[in-house]
Structures are given as C-alpha cells and as structure tokens.
Amino acid sequence: MKTLSPAPIQLVSALAFALGLATPAFAQHHDHAQHAATEAPKQDEHAHHDHAAMSQAEPATATPREPVPPITADDLAAAFPDIDHHAMQHAPAFNRKVTFNRLEAWEADEGTGQAWEGMAWFGTDTDRLWLRSEGERMGGHTESAELEVLYGRSVSPWWDVVAGMKHDFKPGDGRSWAAFGVQGMAPYRFEVSATAYIGEGGQIAANVEAEYTLRITNRLILQPLVEVDMAAKDDPDHGIARGFTGVEAGLRLRYEASRRFAPYVGVVHERALGDTADLRRAESESPRDTRIVAGIRIWF
Image (tube, rainbow, N blue to C red):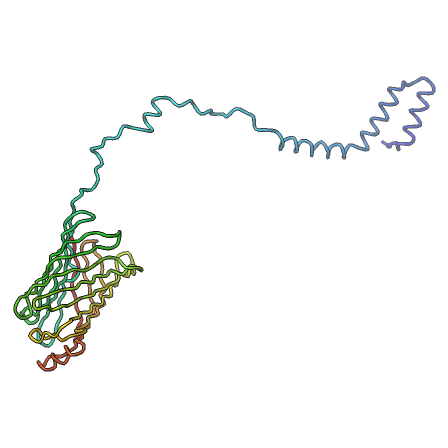
C-alpha cells in the first residue's frame, strides 16, 4: 500500500471541505493525526522523562507495611528491670597481693646458686602495708638476705611514698635501717623504686631499681632490669666503700603459661664499683660476675 505524503493529504482535506464532504472537525482531525504521526517520537520521549521525574519527585507518604506498635507498660518493664543490688557487688576495700618476681637458680664455679626477690602488699587503694624481700644463696650458704616492712601512702594514681624499717640478716651480723622512699610507674611505663636507708652509726645507703615490661606477644614477655646501690660512708666490715658500690643488670624472657605463673630464662651481670671493687679484690673475690639463670615468676 502506498503512503501519501503530507502535501496531498492536506490538498484532499481542503477539497473535501470545499465540496461539503467534510467538516472542519474532520479536516482538523486529519491534521491532528498527521501532526501526531510526525511528532510522536518527541511526545513519547517527553512522556518518558516526565514519568521518571514524577516517580523521583513523588513523596514517600505511604503507610509502613508494619507500623511500630505503641510502647506498653510490659515493654518498659522488660527494658528497665529491677536490679538486685546483692547480685553485683563492688570489690572489697581491703585487698592483698603476693608476688615473687624472681625465684631463680644458676650454675657457677662455686656451686649452684639461688636468688629470690618478692613483695607483698595488704590494704586499700591509698593505704598499704608493704613487705619486700630479696636474697642470694651460693653453694648451700646464704650470702645475703633482707626484709623490709613499709607503710605506703598513695600520693598520685602512679606513685606511692613508703616509710618503715629494713633488716639485713646477711652478710655479717644482722643490722636494721630506717627506710623511706618512693615507688611507682614513671613515664613510658618504667617501674621505678628508689629507697634511702639510715642505719646505726649514721650509715646512709640508697638503692634505685628500674625495670621495663616489653610484651613481645600476649604471653611472651621480655623484662630488662637495672639496679644501682650507693653508700655515704665506708663500711669495711661489710665490704662496702663510699660512693657507688655496685650495679646489677638483667634481661629475662618469660612465658606466661597463665597470668599467675611464668617460667623464664635470662642473663644477669653484677659488678662492684669504685673502692668497693678494690675491697673485693683484697678478699680474693671477683668484682664482677655474669651468669645464665632460669626460674619462675608467680603471684597470688
């Protein structure tokens, strides 16, 4: 079938109108059909865009499929139950802890050696009774042993001031000291203890100890330690001279099988300093010693 071009269609419409065979509405209808045929793609395109715009602009006013029910008294009771104050209790004000940082042994030319260093405290967060002890045995004989009984008062979240008494059981005859000092956590998490002692006859001594806990893994921990001793007066009966008398450095690697039990291995170096080293040489003793140690750390 052959399609007529727009121009003949308009001519036929005008002729039909002139002969009275068509009404103006018929002619307009043909013109409108022609216009619709030629402009249809544009109208469809605009209609498509308008529909998309209307879809995006349509506000979300529809009612939710599952509206939230009003809150009831049972809902409030379930959300805020009555608390039994006896079910949860705060920690008691009075606490305690006993720790043996070092229980170790080693082999030396003189025989098997053992050493211990531990502390315990009893009291509250601000006021505590401290017990500190350390000593050393060699070849079945006690070379040194001491015990400190101190009152500690917290002066900051990280530091305590301590004061009390210290008693040396060995070496030589036993003697007692008045003790006072500080202990706590220094910046960069160094645990520090500094104590001064006043003994009989005006003898004054001091000890400073610092250690650091380096956590390699959650259970493997490396702990370096440095300890320095000082004396204000000569004490030849106990092999001590004025000044810095000795230094000890240790490096211990422990494995925490549990938080309360940890075996370890390490290396320890001790050295006498100044005139104290000369006094040891005069007694045919070595002023320095290095040893490999093995031990355990426990607390309860």
